[in-house]
Length: 370
Image (cartoon, rainbow, N blue to C red; front, side, top):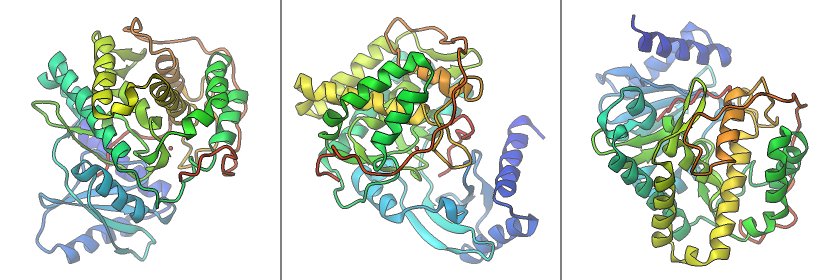
């Protein structure tokens, strides 16, 4: 058994343990698929998600099993398809197993995850031109939401608790991050005047699908945490394209300065309104909000109600160190000595009183599941 197979088996075993399921429940998942797709080969997806079991069925179908606590919002899944087209999978509900697992089908998307591309050390990811292509494609992808938002989607967990989350971040983040959180909180009214759009909830290298030869962006998997948020909040994902996590911290690529500039220039081409400096600054504030929300709040067995802590949430702290100081000269490993250990915090989901009338990790395994 090679290392990859061992990691995959462990990920699947861990899922069933977390879900308090037994071997028979695993057998039932395969039997369920065999009944729906007789004669089709079944194999586990090479990467598995923390909250699901994902299986490939033949060459074109993906079947995913999820505990009810992690059920998919099919309205959001449909909206993702409507807004982003083939960049999002076409998702359908198949049924519920006796174990309580919910089964969903999705089309198998083309490409390879950016994480796997990097792990394979393939030429595409090493090419500056290919990285430029990916940054431009990412800008074009994000612009789709600006031009076609979905006002009928209700606000989700994060959208309903922006103020309380920011206040908790101001109070409980390590001191070096608190000034940024405080500034974003004070400027939240500007962020909330931006269009509220459907945002992918976990833009990481493992969830970004690219062409293995050209590095063109082909799509995203794992839309389970998508929800409607101010435009720009999910721009934290750009950092995952400009660099990657190393054993010593997050490392930006040598050309990250140029890539960042290219991204913003392409975005302004796709969205002419961002030529206005005030509008552009509001979007950049929203980007900082996204960094704080996605890396300043921990993922604990699906719960997102605790501010990250030094020593405990090492990778998230390293990402905050890098992303909140994303100056172009930071093209080396970013590591800081822990200075404090702070208490957890519980959030409310009370809506922001300042909202304009428009209508979520160290524990998270960053593994794409289609």
